[in-house]
Length: 159
Length: 159
Length: 159
Image (cartoon, rainbow over all chains, first blue to last red; front, side, top):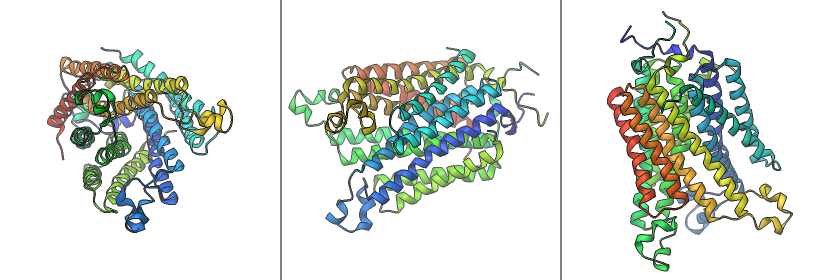
């Protein structure tokens, strides 16, 4: 069967992989949402970083005053960066984990807890909730990714 | 056929996957290029952030004056961060999309538009072009990734 | 054999893929470690960015003085961002490379050099070592990722 064309549906028929694809798409969309939230705060707070973005507010000093930082904009940017730091490892390690043959129920548990924790984290950061709300939701997501990485390394270890 | 060794060429024989691999490699290389552009501006504008990077300019105050921010360096860094925020979701969601069995022509359309939009975005940001040049190129790439995510979720949904 | 359920163990039986999964998990864990190092410096240097994080230090001015930047915190954050800029492309391009059917020995060479270079880079950045220690370790990892991207594009090119 050498040279057989890969059926693109092969992997996608696997239930663990389908579950991973679902949750990975959800958390990546959640991360992408931060671009819109940052843009919303930039427009409503009139706080920009690029001179060309303030050109529509007039010329010279009248536009320059909108080149400033705003606490809400900076907060949204920190959520976005925190998502990059945590959701990207989840997607990378989660893909390897999904391919390492875990039980569907165990895999779903990992994916669901991570996704819930990151959605809570976003609310905790943006509202903001008093600590340790944000810290705990961050730690739960971190622990889930770590658990998946441990399972990947236990299964595939080849150095 | 249990226990059959995976042929590493299986997935790579699939045309949609080959197209994805091509465009994913191109946009990731484009993102990596931003490191070189930032380094170029740091060296030509003599604007550094780490004291150990200015040691070759002499000791004490003569070196310290190069620990500063520069508009061109900061602009290149913003392009790089924007690439991380947009190209990374494209690669993650695009991989799931490529494995979800789309038509080759539809998949190529997504990959080509995204890649073109992100290359335009880099030029629009670095030159810089007047708005809405950068905004539109950003939005096109965003919409393509969103469209792929929608198709992935429609195909694989398993929560 | 249409409609055959994908065996989740198929890909994971491939030795190059197992090697990739091992090293990808290691470098992603290394990247995640930066969150803990940044948190450690924030707590020991008492340098925070969110007002809600300083609430336990008291109210008003007594807490406000901990909303500040600290050189060690900023340095750890730069290492983390540099990891995002370099480890994420490695994982994306490395996955495509592992699926493109390279020799195991060649693949292992790429993965090992990259992983070693990034661990050296972290030490060089955090200690910090005099340049060009950090610059060289960065460049080695960059060159490895570039070499894998070249091999991917040579194998899959479909635009």
